[in-house]
Length: 165
Length: 403
Image (cartoon, rainbow over all chains, first blue to last red; front, side):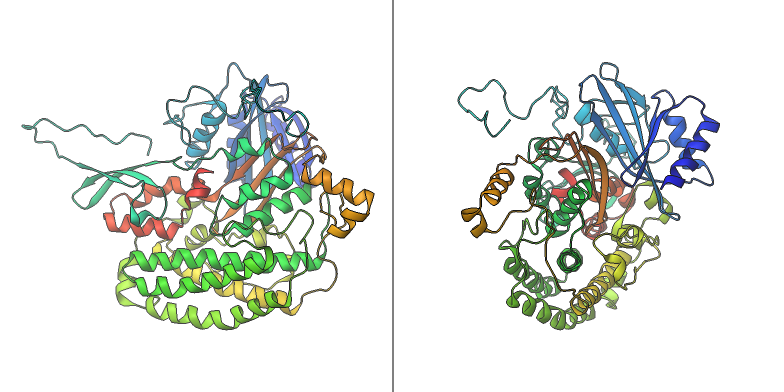
């Protein structure tokens, strides 16, 4: 795993000098945090490079940072013949949630990006049909953002200070 | 897929070709679940399809952010409810990976038995429903009683049949009774005969073959681009199986083959699933034969409920019991992705923990959701009846699709 991390780091550093913000090994996964301006070029490079050949998009999803000021999009890529996996993340401001789409690289990214848009409001530039997928079209919030708590926090008829948190 | 189905009717003096719009679903008896497709038809031929999702969306990812880790297992039951035990085990293994605990070999082998039984149950549903949709009700009803036998086994292990909540973080809550083992032994002895009889009905049946060969095919290249996994990817000719690529729960100890198809059509998906059931039976026999002795759970008092008599008589056990039941156990910080081979493909759990009692973010990589988006592409130019069996052979499960 260490070896794979170094190999990818070397290749990415040679190609994109300041795109990598950090690289680390989390459990059994090499994880790269990439500048949001370069994210599309980096995943395209990871996909199309002959040696790395991360040809399979396992997963694409979003998340929010703990301070609620940033959103992130997380790609899990897989090189099946060599069984290498890598996680690529990118962070951007929650007020301008825009990154390029990956649907030009994988048609399978289509619904995953729609799901991420539906839950977090990330606008994927260039997506052919970016609209809600699981929630109703009329919904005007992005429900997985932390600013929308699961239950109404103003309720007074229910006291679960002790156990519910 | 990017465009909306055009529902406007051309003016009466227009010579433009007119299509008819057919609303297939959401509760059509032939779609086996809540799937809606708005089809644009030229007579019997499908020109375009737009699936609608979300009819049973239950916001599991949001719910999981408020629930302690042990209480998320019942949520995973309801993803692919045809093989809930695999989802449960996948979740337990994700948490075990996060808290870095090794569970005893015996528990891992027992998990393998449960997972393979539920894989058989899942494939029974898919294959018999292909039979049903092609007009053979006999096979459907005949093999379904074997799914009942599998559910009987689950019932004797954990008390539940469909939404099992089987096993715990750290291992099994108790060793299996002799009745359970008897039921499993009886099942692996008798099921191959029933499966062969079912196959004799369909596998080399001329009508069935004419009906399913070249129906809803997908090339291996397209399947990879659409992130297919599981039997549907293997039917297209790619030998990717999580159990082999990144073994979990001691799968490296077992000998089994990965069946693959060639053209990715309905017939290939049928045969791949059929062979997988046989391989699963072989894995179960190997697990029973080589079953190690020893404990069935790891020693992690923070997560694994203590025995009842200790709770009543011992202070520490009482504290742990209380903390686990009320969900007050903190887990370490971390960010992991763990995947298991579910009934439909790579079922992944992407978990971010901020060190609290609940996950900060939990994402389910649901194979159905990802491969169902290729469905409009696969049925373009096909007949309506082909669209029905293509969907049943892809084994799209509404619970997993909508999460």
